[in-house]
Length: 489
Image (cartoon, rainbow, N blue to C red; front, side, top):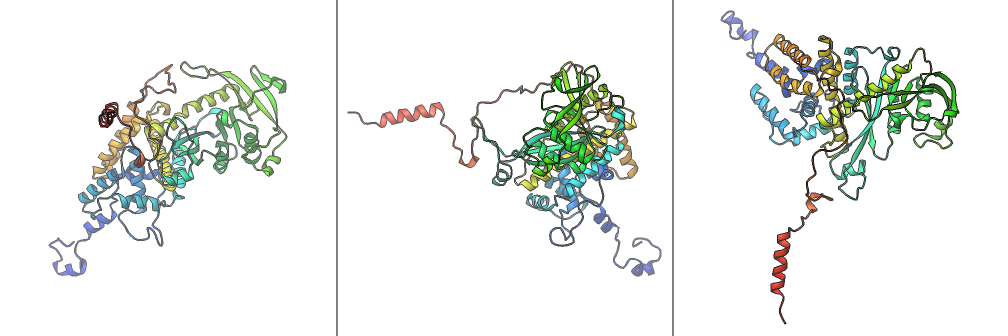
């Protein structure tokens, strides 16, 4: 309006402060890395990480809560990126868009990450898991009931006094010890997304951490776990308090004398009595509230797959009806759990979650949640590609999807229209549909290290106190010098 030749006499009234178009564009544009919100914002709630009403993050800063979260997410999608690289990209984007000048140090970004509220991260994780579950095709296994898997793992933290105090390490006599965090996750069988997380030190058992996730389970769910979760107390709590059934391997040996009824070949109804000794992760009141015995079902079957370590398993389950829940479906559900355990491998290997990098327990927890959220967002992209092109979800590569999202997001950030961004997103989905995992029957993946370790000495203490040993030629040179200085009689 200010540049039009018409209504020149009314220009002071129509635009008294000049053109505001550039100012509005600069305020509305979000200076985030690769504009990841263009790809993932529809799977994230818009009310996450709001501006604080007072104190920290209550004023407009360069590192707002929303921008800081997306910077952390970009850093999770690029595991080798440092905080300095985040600041450099923000500097470049601000310079390109005419934004404010940023400091070259990454201290402001680190402090902004520390100021983010921790309670917002579980909400973001649950929202992404819900979006993935809603988009994924439903499973017809076990009467179509919702299947959730549980598994535990551990990650290594930097060796700082705060991390050592919160997560004491295991003292290893042959090597250095680092603080370690134990975690238990729930994931969805339909989508492969991580639904919830519980974390603690190595002194806390996985069963204790699982009790913290009971609020994430709903009545009618089926929980599938490995041998570490197949005990009497857990199955009694799940069935009695939550109405959740369990499928998994047993921690105890199945005694043939306790078989109540033979349901089919290698399929029995058994009775388990409550152990005499109280489970340490339950209180006395909870232990006394458990039933004296449980009627369970034991299913023995072959899970032979060329390249698999376990050939035959015996499962225990609370699904005692053989007509509604055939033994073949129970074995198939447990076999699918093995495939979905690769989600943890995607997190620890592909997204670099095996060793976190933050120096305090609170920021380590935020970094852990951000990696899980990034994993769920990639799973959402894989699900959309599988549904749109009518493909099995297991054939789409997680690593290939991660690489494609990183590159296509840069192109989408340069697109000038919503139509062009949508075309790029459709091209991304088509690329994922064409880049499928090959059929690899009998592929062996042993738990062994191929590369030989180097001969450098292990750092058994803080680096500032480490003193290297003298080399052989230095020891010989000093020995000859001492001999020459020794007076002869």
